Structure formats: structure tokens, C-alpha cells
Amino acid sequence: MSAEEGMSKDPMRDSLMSNSSDEDFSDEDAENNNTPVVGSFVDNSVDLDLEYDLWQGQFEITKPSGRCGNGHAFYKDIVKTVQMLQQQVGVLAENQVNSDDRFSRVKQDNAAYQARVVMLEEQLREAEMRHEERLAEEQRRNRELVTRIEREKQLTIENYTIKLASVEKEKKAVDDDYRRSKSQLEKLQKEKEALEDRVSEAEFSASALHQENGKLAELSRREKEEIKVERERSAQVIEELRCEIERLRTAEETARKRSPSVDPQTAQTAELQATIRQLREENKNLVEQVEDLQAQLLTSRLEEGRTLVTATNNNSLAAEFEAMTSEELKKSLKDAQEANQHLRSYIDGILLNIVENYPQLLEVKQK
Image 1 (tube, rainbow, N blue to C red):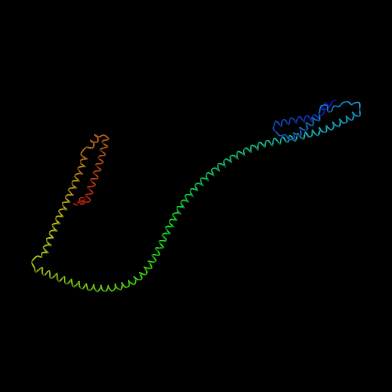
Image 2 (image 1 turned 60 degrees about the horizontal axis):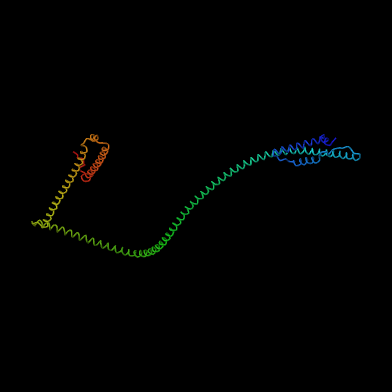
């Protein structure tokens, strides 16, 4: 029997070869699934060791040669080697089973990890998208905030600029007022000093005037007494003169009764009185003539007004309206309005003249 047939009949070798084929198929499945294989390097090294350890004719047993002792020893060595190899194959089979278990576990873990990686990548993409959206929103808010802050800052700067200009203007006005007030204060201080000098002078003058006033009061009292005495004396003289006038008037009347002739001064007085009476008569006649002329003027104005009124009402308005066109009618209406306005102003002037000069004409006479 050859070693090749023995190997084909060996169940351990068949299981090892089937495991190696399953290993190769598992490796191909792993490569097709793009899944990293843990322990594949160990399995491949085991397959290579088996390939190097097993070759055709390795366990070929030939008949012993003429030397029986050497053949028996060689046979024992071969058996021993086969047993050792069987032990190694068993160990390798156990290792292969363990490797398959590890590979299946690693494959399951790898699939779970790959699914988790895909899920984490999706979560990462979603987180990146949310982060980008939040970043864009925050950038937009920051731009709006910066724009608003810049605008508020500009408005604040403008307000403070206006306030600064106003404060500077007020400061300038206050400085001007201060200088003006200072000059006025200096002027008032000078005036105060001058007034104090004048007050001192006035007090001195007042004391002098007080003394002078006492002297004048004494003089006034004396003058009043003298005036009283003089008044009594004058009253006495006036009484004496009145008595003298009465006596002279009585003597004049007595002399006038005694002499029948007319005094020339009395005749001249009578002539003047006659002239005055004549002038009064002439003045009265002139006043009457003026009143007559004013009455005639008033009468003529009234007649003129009546003429204007009657001249307006003589013609038939209906006939005139029928003979006129619309343009002529408008023109006539305008002329009539102007005539009425002129007539009203004329009548108002006459009434005003009557009220000013002859209000008695407007009085109602009682029968």
C-alpha cells in the first residue's frame, strides 16, 4: 500500500483538508465582504506548513530489504513519525476549530463594528450638517449683531458728538457769560466803591442838610408868622378899598343921574353891540344858505339814485332774456351785478352822508 492511499484513507487528514478548504472559502467570503479577517495569517501559515510537511510519496512504505534489522527500525521510525504527525494534525485540527470559532466571532464583531461604524458615520455626517447649520446661523447672528452694534456705536458716536458740540457751545457761552459777568462785576465793584463814596458824601451832606433844614424850619416859622401878620394887614387894606369902591360907585351913580348928556364911551359901546348883532345875523344867514345847498345836493343825489333804479326796471326782463344768447345773458347778468354793486355803494354813501350831516331827516315825526 502506498503512502498516498494511506493518506486518502486517513480521516484526520481529510478533516484537515476540509477545514483548510472551509478556511479558504471563509477567506474568500471575507474578502468579498470587505471584512478584515483576524487570525488569517495564522491559518495561512498552518496551510503552508501542511503543504511543506505533506508531499507525494512521503509515507510510502516499501518492503524491507535484505537487512531486516534496518528495515524494522526504519518501520518503527515511520510509525513513530506517523503517530507524531497524527498528534500534530490533531493539534492543528483543534487549533483550526478554535481559529474558526475565533474567526466567526471576529467576523460577527467586525460586522457589528462595521454597522456601528456606518451608523457613527451617519451620525457624524448629521452632526457635521447640524454643526454647519448652527455655525452658519451663529455666523449670521454674529454678523447681524456686529451690524447692529456698529450701527448703535455709530449712533452713539453721533449723539455724543452732537452732545459734545452742544456742551462746547454751552461752555463757550458760559465762558462768554463769565467774562461778561466778570467785567460787569468789576464795573459794579467800581460803581459800588463810587456809590460808597457818594453815600459817605451824601451822609455828610445829609447831616449838613439836616442842620440846614433846622435853620430853614426856623426861618419858615418866622416867615409864616410874618405872612400871617401881612395877611391880616392886607385884609384890612382890602376892606378899606372895598369901602372906597362902594363910595365911588355911589358917587358915580349920583353924578350920572344929575348930568343929562350921554357919555361918549357909552355911545361907542352901543355901536359895537349893534355891529356884533349884525355880524351874528349875517353868520346865521350863511349857515342857512349852507344847509339849503346841502339839502339840494342830497335831493339831487336821491333823484339820481331813483333814475338809476327806474332805468333798470323800465324794460321787460323776460323779453330781454328771450332775445339774448347764453353769452349775452351771462354778460348782462355780470353788468347787472356790477350796477347793483355800484347802486348799493351809492346808497350807502348817501345814507352815511345823511347820518353824518342830517340825522334829523331819518327821525320819525310824531303826529
